[in-house]
Amino acid sequence: MTKTDIDAFRRALEHWQSEMGTGSKDREALAIETSPDEFDRIQHANERDHAMGVLERRSKRFGEVRAALLRIEAGAYGICLGCEASIHPKRLTAVPWTSFCIVCQEAADRSQETSAGEIDTSLAA
Image 1 (cartoon, rainbow, N blue to C red):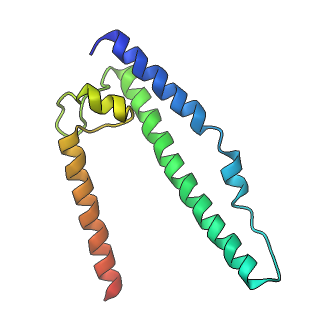
Image 2: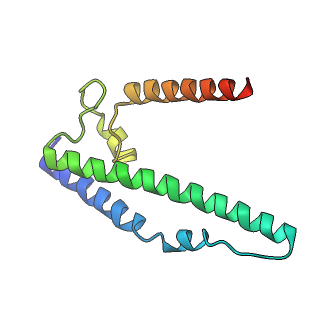
C-alpha cells in the first residue's frame, strides 16, 4: 500500500472519528422521564433501550476507528491481526477500521455466533 493510500485511509478514519464524537443527542435519550401513564413509561423505556444500543455500537466503532489510527501510526495498518496477511484494499475501502481479512473476519463471526448460541442454550436450562 502506498503512502498516498495510507493518508487517504487516515483522513477517512479521522473523519469517522470526528463524526462519532458528536453524539450528545443520543445521550439525551437516556434521561429517565417519569410519567403517571404506564404506556408512556413503557415508550420511554423502549426509547432508552434503543439509545443505549446506539451508544454501545457507536462506542465499539469509535474504539475500532481509534485502533485503526493507531495501527497506521505503528505501520501495521492493512495487515490482518489473525493471519498477518495483507487486507485487500477493497475491504479497507468498504470498512477502513477493519483489523481482519475477510477469511479471518468470517471465522471470528462464526465463533461469536457459536458463543452466543451456547449462552442461549445455557439460559434455557
